[in-house]
Amino acid sequence: MRIDILTILPEMIDGMINCSILKRAQDKGLAEIHLYNLRDYTTNKWRRVDDYPFGGEAGMVMQIEPVDRAIRSLKAERAYDEVIYTSPDGEKFSQPMANRMSLLNNFIILCGHYKGVDYRIREHLITREISVGDYVLTGGELAAAIMADAIVRLIPGAIGDEQSALSDSFQDNLLAPPVYTRPADYQGWKVPEVLLSGHQRKIEEWRLQQAQERTMRLRPDLLRENKQD
Figure (cartoon, rainbow, N blue to C red):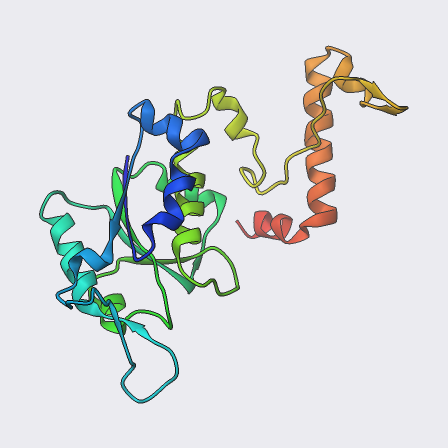
């Protein structure tokens, strides 16, 4: 998989994509993540990529020209499955979406900034808009890093124990059950006996029960989504 990220602040993402699971996936050749500075695609001698909005509204707007030049340059080298714009009014990013996107060959992520991007970018250059939550960030860099992390970790081989990803929260619209490790008794706080029993069927039943109970208590909306599906 190849992920190309267009941003005006590549240094904001660089550290996040070059450590932990994302770094290991790249070192194994399972994923490529490339950062492109949009300022390298502007014809402005001061390397500006923003300007005042028509109509006099407050804030600055990312210009279409450097974005178009960057996307055209990348598309000249390969075809892309998606060109994504990080936007607070895009479709909500979720675990099922991450699962589907982990099967893509490649995609571009355009990180929004300032007041937003010239709307013609969204009309003519973008294939999908994605939001990581109902709030506004200073820029789309954090959203791009979140998506890259959630997607790449699902690629077979990215995580040492692939079964671990299958038991993550949200995989079945359920929160993950509690997990414990040594010592089994810490200052009187004990690990549930069933987990020490070695009886795998009972352990799996306990985990499912705990996942359902935690989801009902903390995220009942996920159970409603199950019923709608």
